[in-house]
Image (cartoon, rainbow, N blue to C red):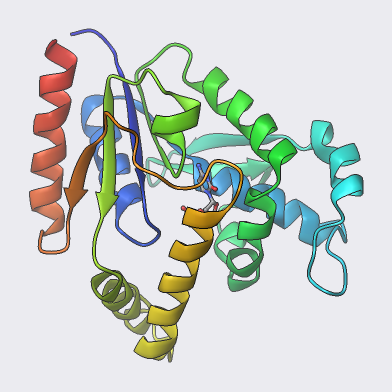
Length: 230
Ligand code: DC
């Protein structure tokens, strides 16, 4: 069976990475979480004082650093899951912090950051056999991908899933706050000037509002089999 490129885009907290990761593992493809790359650059900015007091990015300074920021992935042999490295250091857990989450959309909106990461993502996918998830994978990174999926679910359902996930970890959170955060992130992702989140014309939409993880897995595997056999 020929190797193809699979692009999975969609809104935040809609379960893209879970389905992308599961599929990649099952079919022996590389999985790349492109959001983790934007998060790693954001962590670099935090650790190197590249945010101003007012929360904006010190853009000129970051431009000077950008060629020296190396983001890569390495499979954790114990969990068989890829983990993110920043200049050789494992930052998988640090990039998921609230501080990084609250600052990453500013960094992801910078044209020169996107240019550098898109180049790296294209390099990672040059031999195909890759599943990449993000916001602009089917539109900008791999416009020729053989399979493009655009995942969506209602903001209320995504907020409920996030609420369940956080309360299961013992965190005290309010559903209303999470819903507001989900809606705000949707707004920023869809309205930013550079590479806003939008469905590629040839992407297949998956509204997983009323689907279980198992049902999504089966659906995606079927789409993969159709796309890989043409
Ligand atoms: O998927 P995530 O929440 O980990 O993404 C983190 C941030 O990076 C989020 O603000 C959207 C942005 N992002 C992006 O702009 N382009 C991508 N291809 C992936 C993520």
